[in-house]
Length: 328
Ligand code: F6P
Figure 1 (cartoon, rainbow, N blue to C red):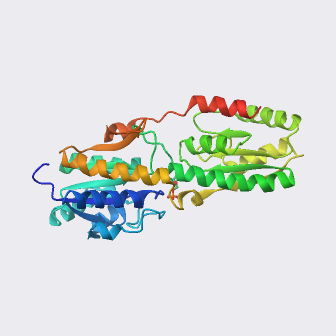
Figure 2 (figure 1 turned 90 degrees about the vertical axis):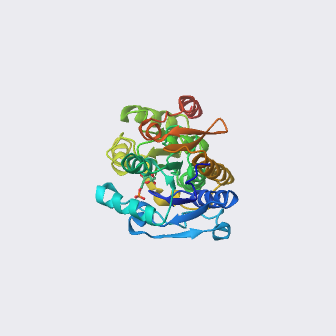
Figure 3 (figure 1 turned 60 degrees about the vertical axis):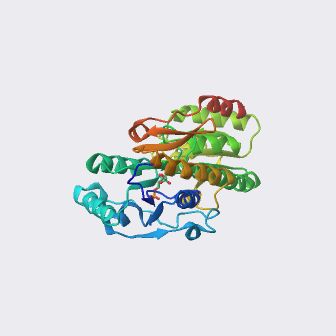
């Protein structure tokens, strides 16, 4: 262990995700196990700039493994984008004798961490926490599995009412510019069509597919639309366009929104968070930093932060094909 590593700070930043609490708990307990002091920083980079932090011990994180959200709270800090903001953050770290930071968040969080590391040489390590699953270097981000289950559950409920009224539903799901939630939850919930930004199905093909569905005897349908998809201006405009070409359809739109970000983390996310937290602390103890902890083929791995931020995640082509076959 490098001589200097006596105190580690941990924070959550960007959009919250189920499993973040489990990751904080893991970092705190791994620190306690290795006799390192752990400091929780509230409200992400904004809290760091304001010096909003407190020491956490193993008992401070009791009964949180099962809770959604993040008890350290999260924020998207504008001040941290400025040099003055980052200097204030650095001064608080020095004054509080913190030697390294564990950052739990998405690409915005990691970009901030990288810049901070370049400017001050301060050791940082990332844990990917976002429901979008859009981070390069890991098969899964924390919160993604929970969000998928939430979305599938919501679509199942919508299907009940869609089939009772013979309606066509357009359901918008989150994911920013990525279609992982839409594709996986769409297949899991048996959607008739799935629109994702990575594969432009196009309006005409959507129309053809809906016509085919109707001809084959389907009286109700579910179309899952990723929020980043560009088939329409937005999901409402898209539904209107379809309605004007297919007036016989009784169409409704549901935007699932932030319901996808809340809720009890699944066992998968809790276990992943526990593994990633331990690896983050032990990687810092090895004297390594500027890395992100990830998981590939069930093995915990490390990816340089800049690769994690710049790399593009691939959409699962095999799953696209499966979804096409399933909508026959
Ligand atoms: O990155 C997570 C995410 O939930 C995206 O899926 C979504 O586009 C965005 O955050 C919403 O951000 P906010 O909570 O700031 O509206």
